[in-house]
Length: 224
Image (cartoon, rainbow, N blue to C red; front, side, top):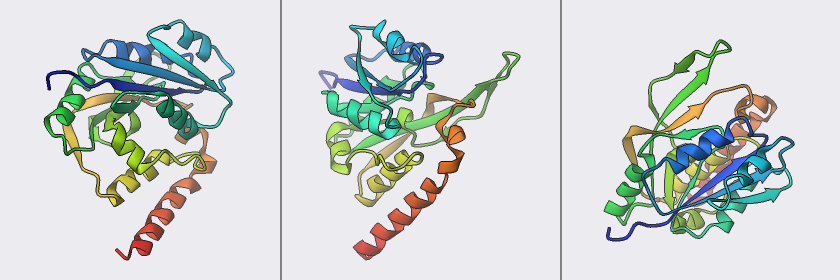
């Protein structure tokens, strides 16, 4: 590819002041340009918006009332202009060279709609020790790079789900027959802590059942 495509990075952030700077630095340390970065402050009560603004003009900041990660991602995506799109959670980190690897796969095969890589989960113990799990294959928001036209074809993330909205989006990707590829190397470090959405909203686990039920309903409607 003679000219690299613009990658738009959307970072939804809710009370993420403790982690956001590290996430942003993992973006700016990528050896891929051009980049467009938008932080969507989802009604935070801490210094998230102030911290994000400190990175201007390299970072654009959108302020919204608290509506959840799906709503924040949709708003961020609507404000971007890049032909390639990724969603990095404010508490996660890209590995070095992640964007070069992901974008390279899409550049090499124009028929691909999206590509994702391996994920390393990590956490810090109270005494500061670092614990990491072995890399696993996972189509998580921050591990996935997609073409804008493909994202728009599938549609945005469901805002009626408190958890599982990216699983629902991935199910629609599969149902529509979009083409994807998987890297064999890690592209994302996923931070595990007490404020992960899946931990904070244990009472929303029924949303996962909703995702499965709705996917099965769509299959029946298609007669497959």
